[in-house]
Amino acid sequence: MSVTIYGIKNCDTMKKAFAWLSEHGVAHDFHDYKKSGIGAETLARWCATLGWEALVNRRGTTWRKLDPAAQAVASTEEAIALMAAHPSVIRRPVIETARGELLVGFEPERYAQALAAEEVRS
Image (cartoon, rainbow, N blue to C red; front, side, top):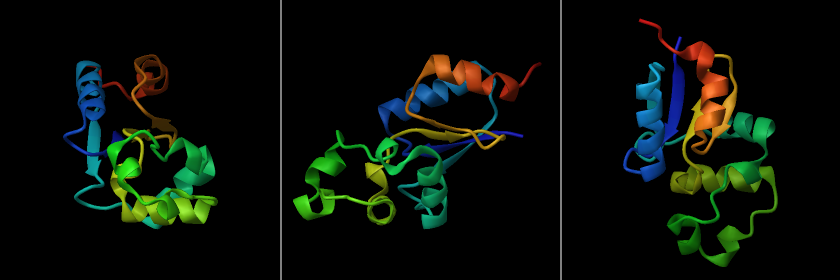
């Protein structure tokens, strides 16, 4: 089984995550949510596990370009609608392990701990 990494291919943080996964022999599938979108049901599952605040990137250019009304997210439902409409506002990467664990952002130490069982041994 492999992990799935969600994000946008050209993002610098994604490039670090791809490099880490490759260097550690972790088989992975890539879901580019800028090209393929992201389903509301996936976002709802992530929000139920992590909370929407952990998923919305309020520091990125996409967020800064949104009008204040769109930035006034006050509920999970509003956050899901915002992330579905503007996938670039989702923090990157989101990694879903074969066991269903979610990792958000690039944290090599956390990756090492959570993905040790996913590594491909030659």
